[in-house]
Amino acid sequence: MPGLPNTAMPVQTEMNDHTAGLILKQTDYKDYDVLLSVLTKEYGLLSFRAAGARKMTSKNAGSIFPYTIADLSFDYKPGRTMFRLKSARTISLYRHLHEDLSASSAAAVIGEVTESFASFDASSVSLLYAETEKAFAWLDQGKNTNLVLCLFLSDVMKFSGFAPEVDQCVVCGSSKVHALSAKEGGFLCTEHALECKVPLSEAVDLRRFRLIVKAGIDRLEIVEKAGGCQEKDLEVLENILLLHSGLRFKSFSLYNRLALY
Image (cartoon, rainbow, N blue to C red):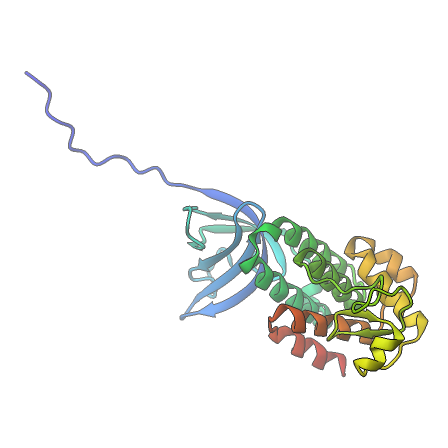
C-alpha cells in the first residue's frame, strides 16, 4: 500500500545570530521596552527592541547600557534593520563613562555623530567602529574630553571627505597661512583672511590645530604631550562639522553647556 503523503509542518529551526556591537543610544519605548541603536562590524547600523528591559526582572537590562560594547543575540534577516533582542552580554562596560558627567556627555556626542554618519555612509562602518571604540576607551581612561572629541571629530571628517585644510590657504593654496576659518573650512592666508573678515591667528594656535587634525585619535598621547587642545579648537571643529555636513547634533549643546560650569 503506497505511503500517505507527509502533511506534517516542516520543523522550523530557530536562528540564533550573535554580533558584537557598540551601543550608541538607548531610548525608552512603550511601558517597559527600550530601543537600541547599535553599530556592528558585520551588519552596519542596527536597531534593536529589548522587550521588558525596564522591568526589575529583566535579564538584559544590565548589559545594554549606552556607550558599551555587548554581544547581542538575535535572528538576522537580510534587508531588515530593526530586530528583537534575545539576549545580551557585556563585553566592554567603560565604567568611567557612566560615572563621570563630562565623560558621559562627550560619549553622547561621539555616539550621535557615529550614528548619523553610519546611517548614510555604509562604506565607513569599519572606520567608524574602530574610531568610536578607541574614543570610548580614551574617555574611560579619564583623558581630557575636549581632546578626545577634537581628535574624534577631525578623524570622522577626514574619512567623510571634508577635513579641515591645514596645509595651505583653502582659497588660493598659499603655504603662508595666518588665520583659521570654520566657514571657509581651514587655513587662510592674510589676504583672504582680510577678504573673508576673519581675524588673524597666532602661529602657535595654527600649529596646535594642525597637529590635532593631522595626528588623529590613535596618537592622542602625542598630542597630549605637545600641549593638548584648547576649547576654541573644539569650537572650530564643531562648526566645521555643522557647516559642511549639513547635520545637526543635540548632544553638542548639552556638552557645551556643561563646559561652562
